[in-house]
Image (cartoon, rainbow, N blue to C red):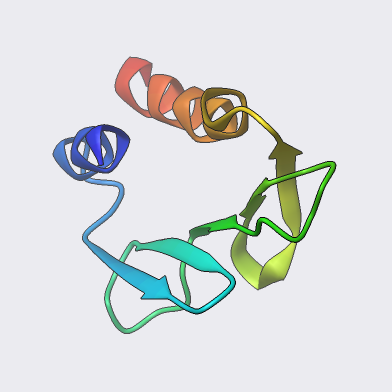
Length: 85
């Protein structure tokens, strides 16, 4: 949620959605609420090797991994570019 707050402050995201299923939980971030999510973070315990999966627009897998910080590094880099530029 800290990353979400910083992305909102930078003007990159405006809305989010949480989806809590019986086996999978996901967090989606939107530029505008009427669009598809810009990123979607999914925690799927059934994936032994890769618990966290970060999807981009169109369902493209951006990053997978055990550590949340490593998976979110992709989004952190976007924030740094937006703040610097």
